[in-house]
Length: 130
Image (cartoon, rainbow, N blue to C red; front, side, top):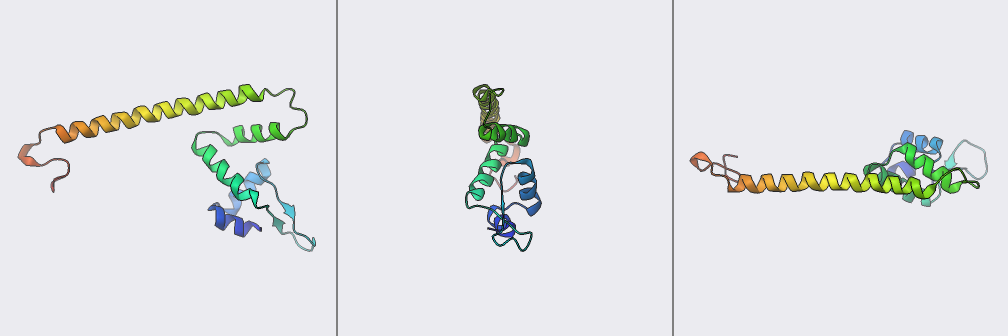
């Protein structure tokens, strides 16, 4: 598929897709026939882009993703401790999840306290006044 189709289907801009390709996160191939500069992306590229977005949303940086992808595809990953790298990323995600749960729990407790709190003139959460 060409970059325009990939952009529409993924919801990413062409510039973002090109940037990811320059960073080595995805790949394209010249269009068969070679008479133009069009590039084709495989069907698995959509899945890769979705995974990249999910990983970023979970807090992984593009640098982390590039490092991981390069090492996983390298023939000689002797200098790279993939287990330690992944353990560190997992610990970061788990810490972020714990912080998010604490914020969620605080918000829930605050909401419950607001519902129970007495309000002057009967105005309170859920009333016409608030």
